[in-house]
Image 1 (cartoon, one colour):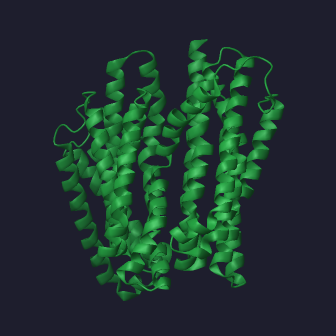
Image 2 (cartoon, helix red, strand yellow):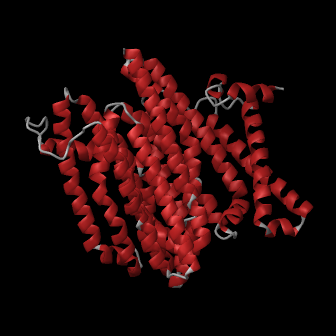
Image 3 (cartoon, helix red, strand yellow):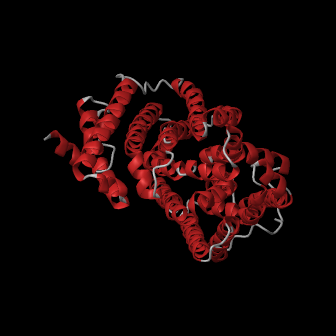
Length: 528
């Protein structure tokens, strides 16, 4: 029975991870055609408000359902589950109404604080999605607590698919009919509420089918006081949600500081908007890099949790160490590849080579953000919520304090450096905490070898690309198809070079290599 239950949990975790991975890829990829249709200024308008959506979606999609599932699992019987769900629903309904009316009423001052009063209707458009958060969070949390991940996975995929379809349709319509970018932004951001309606319909079907009721007052005495439950919801659920939306919180700081800083730096208002739009190109690149780097780690998390639940401390430390080392190597390789190929990737995706330097700096975030996510998973599995929350708070404070000053001094590149520095500070704090577990992650000169290998790969790929340009002539540089061809060649050569040198320098142990997908096959190939 226990074995079957564990198998169900593992299958559910894998299902939800796959759905989350697909949703993240969709969320990153759609921005490229969207930017191509609406231009830099249109992209700026959308990205200024996107962090509000991103934070709300993270709370409703992953953070709060995870906490609610824990409450459901702790409940002794079905009546107690219904009572807890009702209490959480009431608390979240009150919070969501406060956020909704706050965004509706203070949209003007928020837009002015962002340096652009015309953003007001877009802020009001995104606020409607918060009305659906209580139902989505509680229903998803209930089914996850029952180890049934199908409702959450289905609603997540439907939600992202509908949202992306609406956004791209609006962008195409706006381009064809020459809409103002702010009108386009308002309709594009309305996709959040429209997608929430479809997701709610999916969850309502599951709730009705399994006869789950949490909006009616329970007959039995509730298991928690509202004050106690609100505190747990704020600390435990809030910590999980905030870390899940870490990069979005960084983007929210950018929304209030970068455009204003660019104007103070000396750019005209329209120039500052366009340059902020170019800076925002880095976000989908970082998001895709994080998907690649953390997808492996998420597949190991159930094993980590199982080892801890069975009090196998040695196995827990061994798995945690492997997670950190493998994720760091993959993230570093992805970052080095993006930096080396940035001019070609930027031109192929967005049609020009503007902002190559600041985007190259920005993608350094992938390494630090990956480590932070892995550290957070390990520490939260040990119920170390306070440490991770302090680390996040200090990192955000550093970002808030230095971003506008950095932009005024260095231009848009200052915002990239501010993000990297803030994440580096957060990484340092969590690294010190993780070191107390005696994992010995960075042994065998891992960091020095990794840095040397990444620098060598960047230099080698740039030399290769210069040779390709010299051989094929200037026509290759002027064509987006040519940029795709060069990028593809660079990726293949970069992967072969990185893996070959990593094996030669013994960057990872054989056991660590074998944990990667189909490692036994390509390891035999490289050994030849």
